[in-house]
Length: 336
Image 1: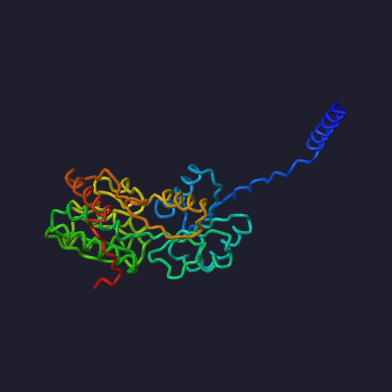
Image 2 (image 1 turned 180 degrees about the vertical axis):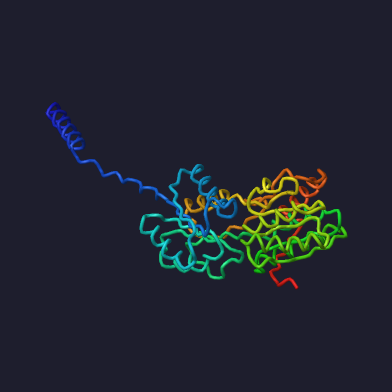
């Protein structure tokens, strides 16, 4: 009897094992696929302008190299066309849309509301009061850069007269001018600044005329804040009988007036784009990014045609701006 019980138990165990082995395996849940991001950039000008649009193109090239993201871009897009171009990219499967230029902010923010699953990147000079949750805003923070430029110019002048030559008298340009004045005041040096505007960012003839007038007044350093108008400024300083130095904006423009050129205030858009991309990957589809000397903006070095001591002093000043020891005031009020 005991042997029968043992045999019966053994059979039951074997049947149980067979049933376990024959039972269908529990389904394995697959992890959801990571979202593939594709970025399209929209530029108001051409990428060969050696200026603001070149910077943007270099930014998306740098982002692509750093992350492998697929990118595309459109050049010379006018404000009335930007909504259509953004929609075309969305229809083509692009899910990060970057509009390069403050003139596109309103349209970009408006479209972001209609496409909550698409990330939009806009840039300008004043953060939006009611920004959509899927919009990143890049604050260009021009005034901080021009505090650095003003710090260079005031120390480079030998006549005690410097000039600021802008394109159009817009709020961001006023902010640049006020920052230059703050740099002059903070220096403690006896230097006067004349602020003038050519009336156009891209007219070299007008810029040349205004620059000639600044030189006639005795300005021996001129801070340029224009696009194609810079060529008129370069021609003026090269033609001057007296030595006149110049600073530029956006890109290295030293080849246009090598004997007169000091430096340029430059942006590296790869830095904000990479930071925003990483945030998007982490789930932050919108936010605020402020450009500054430690976040993608810099004064081009080495400084040219000035005493090495100027570079040493300005380097220390920029460090104080980054640390917060120096507060560069943003004042967009009209220069009178």
